Image (cartoon, rainbow, N blue to C red; front, side, top):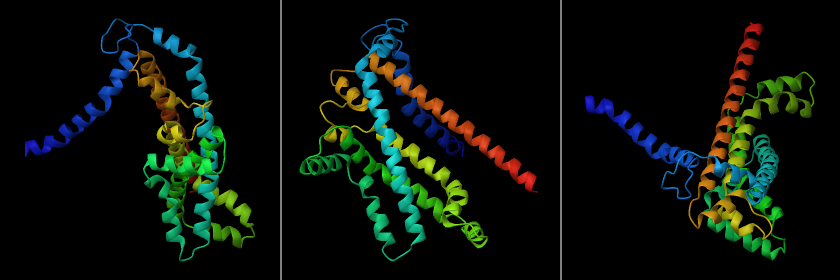
Length: 268
């Protein structure tokens, strides 16, 4: 019985070690003075200084942020309107359309990248930011579509019907009732699509141009010659930014929860 009771803790410890030890080592060796990442040469901030002076990485970071932002915006518009449209106008083909809308995330990335390469070549589109945005929007739309559609399936539409009965127009009902209820799902889709776009390497390699590099592509090309402390420093900075965003999102979520509880108490 004791072995069984300890098994979950052992399993959790193994998972934690496998997951977080590489992250901890990356952070620690980003402060390594030695150029060889496997040898500790003392504490130093040299690689962070070189990182912030690296214009190529800075330009690649800007490209990645612009690309992820444009892809998210396009995916939110297409995915949200598609989910609402399928929820409002039900027909027998909804399940088929829903299935086909998920194909971009079911196809292996290398095949999807080859498909985009062939399609853009046939269309004579210049490879660069435009082709990147189109490709990233395509595989980001399903994430927004799935989260918004799941939220719509669990919504109580009686409030919307009551607003329409009281004389509210369809646009006013959507803006005051439907959209606020969908915002958590929309934000979840935004975060998912932003992460997938910012992190993508395979599809981006196929559809980018000679003058446009994203941060993941730049890191991938540099790591072909080996992991350098500068890459470790970049990974640490990105990790810190991710943790800060998660903490901010958690704080905003808890603040909204407290505000909602206060509103309920006042109504009572």
